[in-house]
Image (cartoon, rainbow, N blue to C red; front, side, top):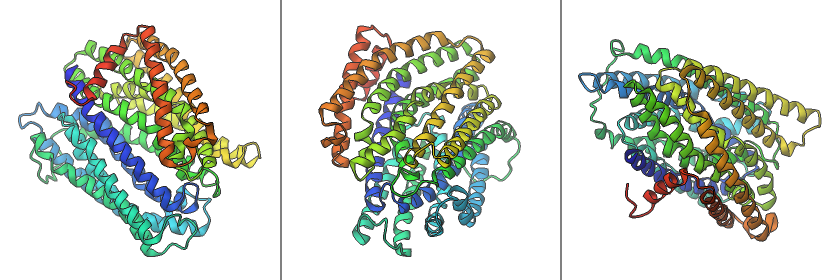
Length: 538
């Protein structure tokens, strides 16, 4: 457990700093282009395009397939050197070709993702996209190197490199504001303005990828170009990645439908950029808790499965879900009652914060199920099963598409106010995730036998019981601080301070009730927190 603890602390600390600097990056960006403005939505769509393709590369191929395969390749006579060389050569070629084709297709991609934008806004988004789409190459290299480092238990660089990206972006966006002023949403955008804003975003990704190469020696691997892609198991990766690729493509198609639905939203209501920022808030606890604790468990799961220690795999499943759950339930309760001041961080007024908080609340419904899904899905992966996750993810994607279309229909029929469309899309996403995790857990139990569902569901129930009074205390604190008209919504900085106060109150009450319930997981959680404190022992 000490190895898991040390890795979790390292990843968690880096993730906290990364997310905080990412928040500051978004605050500066909102100041430059506006939260509910057309220019902000145009930039958000363009800058999301390379992320969508990166999701296929990272989630679809690397996280699911490469880590277990590199762990296995370490047993080769050369320590996996030939395997990784061939893999990196193939990956780089694919990345280069994909980047060139996507950049050439920028106008069609923008029209595909934002079909309801007026022509002038589509033109602006396309101009941004020409600058942003080259990020694909550097996102992919970052993922290839980073996942290879993770497979060799070198977790720090992959977690800490995005901080530098955020710092570069913050500096560039501040330069943009200095040159062209803040609140430029309604101004005529020049080529210089587009180059500074979008070029800054791409420069940050380039620097982020470059930093990882400085740590490559720690893997102990010597990589060289190798175009002979046969003989070391790349066919196995192709078979595994085939299902995973289809799974992520399905997810991207569902996201495309959501994007098209959000393109109906006019300026003044929470649209694509506001939804993106609500997702950023939602991902803060997911990244800090689920990724920092879950990533080391994934490597351990891979090792136990490769060695045939199936009882230990089952034990890892229960321990990881219980450990994740105790933190995630607390985060859900705290962020839910602090949704309005938290949303104020990325908006320009208290009324915008209230509107955006509805989107955040709808996303939060799926935070706990996503934590469980993280473990369940990766258990399939460590057994080289990417076929089953495809089918339960396809079900989730179908539900996402159906709910997004349903929200569009309700909008056209006058049953849904335009200001609620983004929240409706987010609610559909959460509903689909809940169904997905239920089906995934049932399938894992059916295929792998008893995985201790009753035990960790009982633990999640204890956490939920403690979360109710914690949320009540947090909500009372929000009301006493003035509610949506109080000082916690008077500015981004005060919104962050208010959210922190409300969250701290909720956390204290949560821990107190867990102690009353004598939850055994509280000891494990306390040990992890102590390791994160200065001077804490790993």
